[in-house]
Length: 244
Length: 219
Image 1: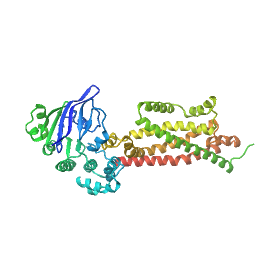
Image 2 (image 1 turned 90 degrees about the horizontal axis):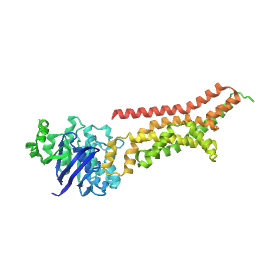
Image 3 (image 1 turned 30 degrees about the horizontal axis):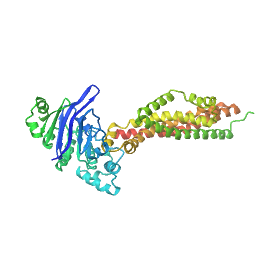
Image 4 (image 1 turned 180 degrees about the vertical axis):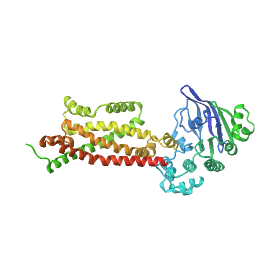
C-alpha cells in the first residue's frame, strides 16, 4: 500500500516548552491508526499539525500529496483532502445539519446546488442519521452531533480523516454509537488517525497503534502486538490500568 | 415677549425631536459602517491596522463626548474649517459611535468560540469565507442586543450637541424655556419625548438579550 501520511522529525515548542521532540510516523492508505498516550504527550498537537491548525518549527509532513514545513504550502488544497473531527464537535449552530454538511462542498469545491440533497443523504446514511437533515445541532444529542460532524467531514471526500479525542466529551452511553460509526467507516477502507483514550477501541479497530510519550513516538506497531507485548516499561504502565 | 406653554410649544419641541432622531440616525449609520470596518480591522487585521484602531478606540472612550463635539466645532474652525452645527454634530457623534460600536462588535466577534474558527479552517474555507459563512452570522446574533442598547445611548447623547447651537430636542427645550419661563412644563415634555423614543429601544434590547440567554441556556 502507498504511503499517505509521512511525518518526518516533527518538532514543535511553545516558547521554552517543547511539545513535539522529533516525531516520525508513516501511514499507508487504508490504515486505521490509534494514537495513545498521556495528556500532554503531544498526541493532539501532532494531529493538529497534520492539517495545518498548528504551526511547527521543524521537520516536514507529507499528507495525501501535500507538503507542510518546507516552503509555501497550499493549506486550502490540503484541507480538502484531510478531514478533521474535533472533541467538541464544532458544528455550526446557526446552520441545519444539511447546511453544515454542504457548506464546504458548496464554498470550497463549488458543488452545484442540484447535487446537495444527494450528498446530504449519502453522508447521513453512513452515520445513521438520515432523518436529521433539517434539525439544528442543538436539537441533537452529543453523540448525534458528533456523528453529524463526521458526516460533514465525509462530505468533502477526504483521503485521510483525523479524529481528535472525539468521544472524550460524551457520556459513556453515547460513546458507543460514535465508536460504532467510526468502526463502520474503518470497514469501508477510510484511512484514519485517531487520538483516543478508548483502549478497547484502539485494540479492536485500529490495525496500528502509536504510543506517544514526552513528545516522541515511544513505541509503534500493529495494535495486537502493542497491547499484548508492550516492549517499553512506559507503554506497559500506560495500558495496564486502562485495559482492566 | 413671553408666550404661554401650549400646543404650539409642543409642535416646536416635536421639530427638535425630529432633528434629534435625524442626527441619531446619521450617527448610527455612519458609525455603524465605520464601526464594522474598525471591528474587523481590530480583530483580524495585521498589527499596523490593529494597533492604531486600538489606540483610537481607547482615546475616544476616555474622552467626554462634549469635548469631541467642541473640538469638531470650535477646534476645526480655528484651523480654518468652519462647519455648520449639523455637520460638526454629525461628525463628532460619528467619531464617538464608531469607537464604541467597534469595541462592542469586536467583543461579539471574539465571543464566537475558537472551535468554530478551527472547524471552518479545517474544512478548507478561506479567511473571508470563514468570516462570511461561519463567524459573522454568529457574531451578529450576539451583537443585536448590545447594539440596540447602544442606540439608546446615541439618542440621549445627541443632547450634548445643543451646546454648539444645533437645535435638536434639548436645544429646542432651552429656547422654549427662554420664551415661556415655564421650565417644569418644558423640560418634562422634553424628557417625555426622549423617553418615548428610548424606552421601546431599551425594552427591545432587553428582550433580545433575554432571548439569546434562553437560547444559550438551552444549548
